[in-house]
Image (cartoon, rainbow, N blue to C red; front, side, top):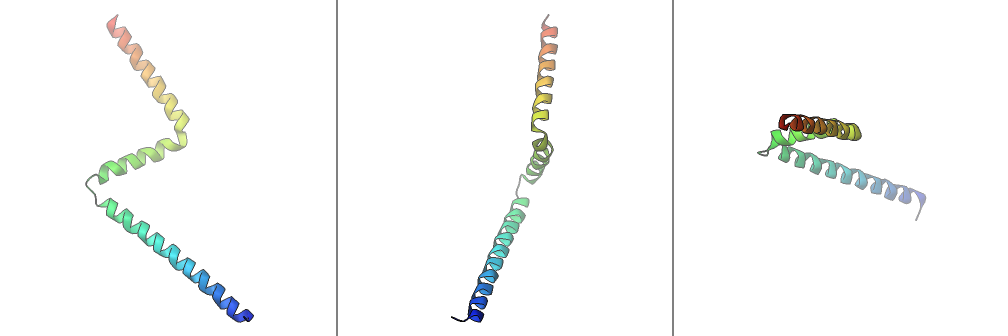
Length: 81
């Protein structure tokens, strides 16, 4: 094999990788479009937004929920007494 045929074979392999990645990106996009037309799109969108807000601050969100729960339990005990 001469070097030019090796180069062309290498370029062909790179091209097929590019086409394969384009195909997977297109499949992902089509899947997203199909999901966006489902019945629960607004619920799914709201849950994605909630996840985007809470994921980076997971520990802080947990601490806030724990504090709120303790306050509500304390108010419940005050209402009983």
